[in-house]
Length: 200
Image (cartoon, rainbow, N blue to C red; front, side, top):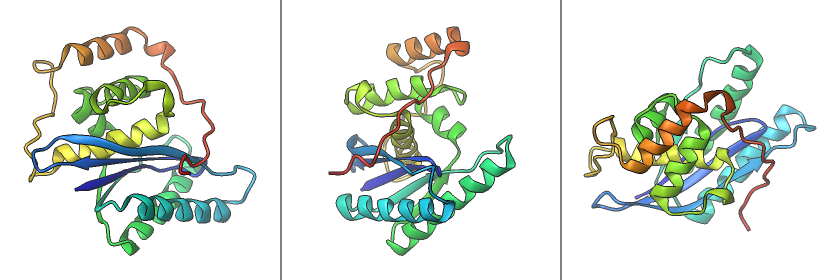
């Protein structure tokens, strides 16, 4: 089974592709982020998002897609634009014949780290440890997308994964990451990358 996770956006959107074995093990296949030109109008950016989404589907042939649910943004304009991006992704996924699921960012973080409020840096470190890639090669938009895909894998009933981590069964690395996050909330790292599609 191959799962495509999407962190939607109208300026930068992230994608992450993982393989899920029958035994429940996960392997990273691809990840990256699309920079959508802020100088273009919304319709043009959404068209670019659709094109890039199709390129990923054609390149990696996922069977499932998991999309991050909308959050209640403070800025209504931001929420509206995010809804447009989600609509494009949902439409393209349906036309591509993918099995579609959705998950909130809070739920994905809870499944992956045991803390629904973990910051992007913590999630990136856990994804790097879990999937075995170098932390500095991907923007947070991509590691968030990988986390969405992995969280969806964990939720699937047909797998044998028991990764829903709580305080009693966290690994030492996960405990260290979350402790550091709690101690440095005010200095939490934000994504500052402007990445084009990482597809060659």
